[in-house]
Structure formats: C-alpha cells, structure tokens
Amino acid sequence: MRILQSLLKTRSALSSSYSFSTSATSYGSIEKKICIVGAGPAGFYAAQYLLKHLPNCSIDVIERLPVPFGLVRFGVAPDHPEVKNVINTFTKTAEHPKFNFFGNLSLGSDVTLKELRERYHAVLLTYGAERDRKLNIPNETESKNILSAREFVAWYNGLPGAENLNPDLSGKNVALIGQGNVAIDVARILLSPLDKLKETDITEYALEALTRSKVEKVYLVGRRGPLQAAFTIKELREMLKLPNVSTLWREEDFKGVPEVIPSLQRPRKRITELMLTSLQAQKSASNISNKQFLPIFLRSPKNILGNQLELTVNELKENAAVPTAASETLPSDLILRSIGYQSTCVDPEINFDQKKGLICNKAGRVICKDPSNNPEPGLYVAGWLGTGPTGVILTTMNGAFAVARTICEDFEANKIAHDEQKPGLDTTGKRIVTWKGWQQIDKAEEAEGKKHGKPREKIVHVDEMLKVAGV
Image 1 (spheres, one colour):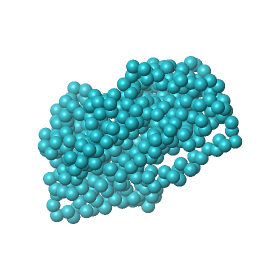
Image 2 (tube, helix red, strand yellow):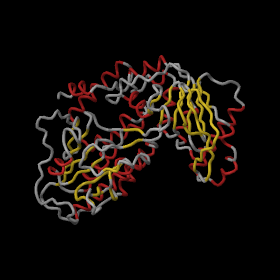
Image 3 (cartoon, one colour):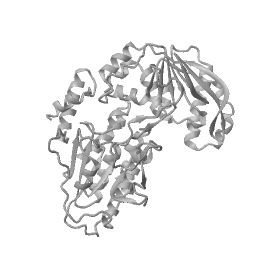
Image 4 (cartoon, one colour):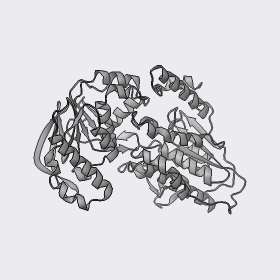
C-alpha cells in the first residue's frame, strides 16, 4: 500500500484523465447489472468509474468479510491514519443509489462463479491476494519461530482469524526477510514507542502484547544492495526519526555506492543519499540506543537453525543477486518473511495460473479455459488478482480504471450481451451484511475506540460483526 499519501493529492487529476464519453451512445433501456467480487481498493475504484461513465448500470459488490475496504483497513499501518482517508472516497461511491454492498458472502462457497455469470451481465473479480510466498529453505515449515509479515500485519490490524496468531515477542532479535514497505511497517510497529501506538486503531490485544515485548533489535534482510532496496523514502525517514531507536548500517554494504549517485534517477538518488547521510551520522553518534534497526544487504536466507538464521552472502551482478559460497548467521528469536503475496483460486470455474498466482487475462479480460485462448465475454479481473502483487495503490487505481473502461467499451460494442434483464444476486438463506449493516459496525467500533482514546477499536470476530450488523 505504498505512497497512498500521493493518491490523496492526485486522485482528481487521475480520475479526469480516464474520462470516457458515452453521451452519444444509446445503450438501451435494460439496466446493465455488474457484480464486483471483492470490496478492496480495486473493487471500489472500478465501481467508482463504472457508476460515473456507464449509463443505466447498477453495481453489486460482494465481499467475503462482513466489512469493506480490504487492505486499506487490514493492511495500512495503524500509525498511518492519513493514508486511510481514501475510505472517504470509497464511502461516497457506496452511497450511490445504484451501488449495493453484500458482505459475508464468499465466492466459491456461498455463491459460485457460474451463478454470478448467469445472474449478471458482467462479473469483475478483484478479491486480491491473501496468501504469502514462502522462502523454501530447510526447516521453514518445522520452525515455530517463523511467521509471515502478512500474518503479523493482519494480527495487529484486526483481520478476523488473525487474532490468535500470538507471535512470540519474548526474544531480543527479530529478522525480517524482505525490504519492502510492509517489512518497514512491521519493523516500525515493533520498535515504536507505545504511547504513540496507543493513539492509533491498533488492536487492543496487539497493544498488550507489544507492551510485554522484549524485542530490541530488528534486522531487515535484503538479497540485493542499497541501490535496489524496495522501501520508499517516506518509510525510511519514519524509521530514522523513531525516538530512542538507533539505525545501524553495515558500511561495507555501501562500497562503490557514493560514486554512482550522480547517475541515478531522482527518486533513487534521494533515498540513496538519505541512507548515506544516516551512515555518516552513525559514525559520529555519541551513543547507541538499546533498540536498534539494522538493515542488511546482499544476503539471502539459507537455513533456519533454531534461533539462528543462516544467510548466504550474495554478489551483485547486473542488478541480480548471485550467491557465493560464503555464509553468516544472525540471531533470530523470531523470523518474519516479507517477500510478497499470492492470490488463490476460490472457484473451479476460474481460469487460474497456479504458477504465477493470478487469473489468466488479457488487459483485464479473463481468458477462456478452452484452447481458443480468447477472452470470455463478460468476465473481467482487476487488481493483484490479475497482475500479481506489484505496484502501489496508484497502480491499483489506474489498473481498476482501465479495466472498468474496457467494460464500458465492451458494452458499447455489444461484446457483452445485455438484451435481457438480469436478476442480480439471490440472497435467499444467506446472512448478508448490507452497507447499512457496515455503518452499524463502524459506529460501534468508533464508540468502543473512544473509551480507549483511540479512533476505533476494531471488532475482530465475524459472529460479533454479524450481531452488531443485525444479521
């Protein structure tokens, strides 16, 4: 979810850049019914575009959880409340008279893709990526001290089902494998002053666990060098400014780096200069705090040996990490892998590429399972489910707008049959949470949060959500 702040400044400009005129086209009097599966950013941005640019349409969004917003609610760090302001835009979309939210409804179990295809003119799949990639090293599955950063983020953000994760924070050393913004978020949460976290919407049980935490050192391990680090300058600045935390770099990791700075593009140049400035400040520091943030480059996980993480020493050749015969070990009471997400196939009718972890598609049009390799009329995919877990929220927004525009064009060109009325979702016998039900959950969370001096205290059990929503 990187660079969400820039989204807030550029949303209007980007939205206008996707203008799509339909005023000269007659679409007929039959309402075009579209189902979007997944109420995260991709789903909401696609709905926003369709409601603005596709005349005589209605949008039904179905979501596995009783609550909307996906990674904005469950992925954004609790100490980044300004990033969650994008929820205001999503709420405006949800208040459109032609928008319906159906929470607590799972594709593949509560409803099938075949049913949705029969009951809607078009279906857009945007249910994201909810599994993490594995390291595939010895002892990974047997070790009790290894978790995914995705699980850890879900735990402190209150994703239902993650509340029982119980990460062991009794040791002094944590190793984070991966150097993206998710890894930086986890490091910051582990090292942040508790007074700062108490004012956020972090879950109360996570706050209690962090109060008891003995973690002092957090290593951030990357397989390539400083010039390839995936974290952003904003995230790094936040780490460098954490009170009572010393950032300690390895000087040897920056060999040859100062010489190439003049040739770097501006974003990479700025973040590299910041790292070098921090390295110089480290040399002249009069004291080192007990809490430490320790980025390590050119290392790949090799093996887990109890509370030790064995690392392979890499060399950088043409921006690729090439393993050498050398190795070292890190003290690691807890290991958190943060090397990416994977989507899953939730319905057998979906043409899913298991190797790539995404739905087979061409520019958002889902490809048929048969050998023709042609797009399947009326079936689309957007977000990480169609592209893989790449890019930032701006990328997701642009991609969702582009796929939504494709849907508009396919309706205009009669590539989507819409000569008969479609019934939409059959909710018979299903415990559905509507938008009104979500508003009741939202109100209850905010009221509970006020008791603790927080913006909200998230409800983390589905049964309780359903009860509050009156389902």
